[in-house]
Length: 504
Image 1 (cartoon, one colour):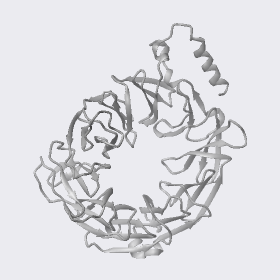
Image 2 (cartoon, helix red, strand yellow):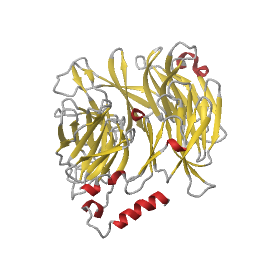
Image 3 (tube, helix red, strand yellow):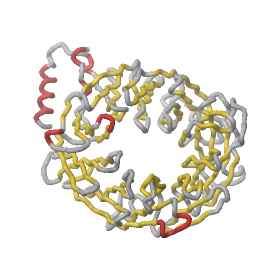
Image 4 (tube, one colour):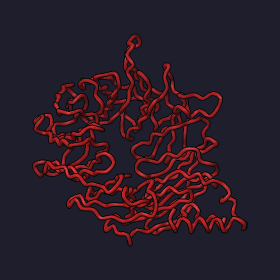
């Protein structure tokens, strides 16, 4: 513990014999941090509330909750927090660029352990997970369908065929089968249950992926969305199948029912490990990676074009990047496998026509454990073990390793793709920690020293700040600018979670 931490600790000890607020006698039991709009949020159990730090202003305010939190789910784009309380109710705290809204309460009876948000953050599905049962008996096929915008929710039990949900994916809200719908796909062994979150009371439709007499354990594990000739199509990848299942819908169905889909199977090559559906230069296509092959599938004709990538490939990371001919942007993807030493840049717009000539491979001397595309570039950043960052430039066909002076922690990429941020624990100087900013164009870095162990690194672009959480029980953070990183520009905020505790 350094001098500042001892000072705060001593101040708390000095209050031991004095009259103190009850909050200091109970463990805070904080969860977080979470990036929430322009704020950083912590959910505190005692007293039950949400602490909201505004990094630009270095101010903290609180939103009170009526019950102790049990579990917290952050909306992936930072548009809100869903808090499950110990009394089983749920609280939704919305956030946007203007601020954080008032909590919305949902009275629930079921026991849930996971949440699946829709792309627009309007609706969410809560479902059971192993370990979520806190009573004598629970129903693992019970789900809660919440409309976060309307403040309404429905709990119901889905039909089961001896299995239970292992994952849920919520699709986009859109016109489908003659009505505005938002489908959620509940995945279980050998089948999917489809519910419409726009009409949550409607009976679900069950889609079986195998015949009743087929003993194969075909388990859906991924759902992705696309359009074919203006009609929504949903693609399902399943363990135990070499096909991708394509589900489309009739032109019309009663608005108060879930439309029954048509099921087709598209050949995807042996054991596909990842799929994406995109509208590329040649029209709608499904891309499947697996067993050293990247397959291009035409969902209209069912034609499959396998393209050898020459290396193990289990992940597809699609993103928009400048076209090779300089004519705007097109769809590209990074094709790789965690723990592998090869990364292939695939020009998806040209892949079907040019095959292997649309691939740019880079083979590194050591394997990568993490890989992130750099937005707006034909480039990516990866981490090589625990001490190297690698800048991959597929236009120049170069891989530039940058050595860290210690053990790498978190890695974040600026939304513009110009900078990469990492935390580093120094191995030669005891108790030294740093935050580094890497300029992608020059492959140079600036850094600033941190006062304590970095436990989490958050990028809050709306506030123009990096936030480093140091994992202390009272809430200690360091606030840094996104550019011009220097020691004297990093501000430290002590006791975020104790703000106002002495006034309560």
